[in-house]
Picture 1 (cartoon, rainbow, N blue to C red):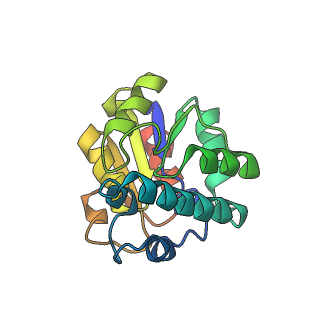
Picture 2: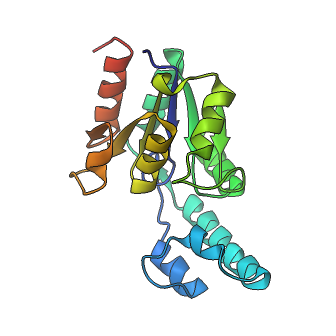
Length: 195
């Protein structure tokens, strides 16, 4: 059981962006705490189009103000240098992912956005990325900072890393927890057989 593929979440895992989900919910008219993308399933086409425009605008603004989380670029380059494929799984739009990749010179072997598959916590995106990168579940690790990341990985049968400063009710469900990307790198190095 080696390491062939690492799937990353974007916002909060690799990218520090001021994406304000509460502001998005308020502008769309959703109650606090409701998952935004799932709520869009229950509204009519005209309201959905307006809501999607609001989300797209907020994502675009967040990318413009974003910065890489310390260690992100080094971790991605390190994995590539070791022959490990990297992929991105996000609930963001393809346009915002492409803008973030350009802004921060991010390169992935594959990416899945909300337009491509049912969004996390569905395991569809994880399975698609494994197939696209030629990796089995036991050769794949998913790294994320939110419960939907861990749920998607677990449902697809892959090992997961919750990047959290302190353990939470959901992070304890991950295979591992790491305080930051430096700790993630050490963990992945261990899986690759290098301390």
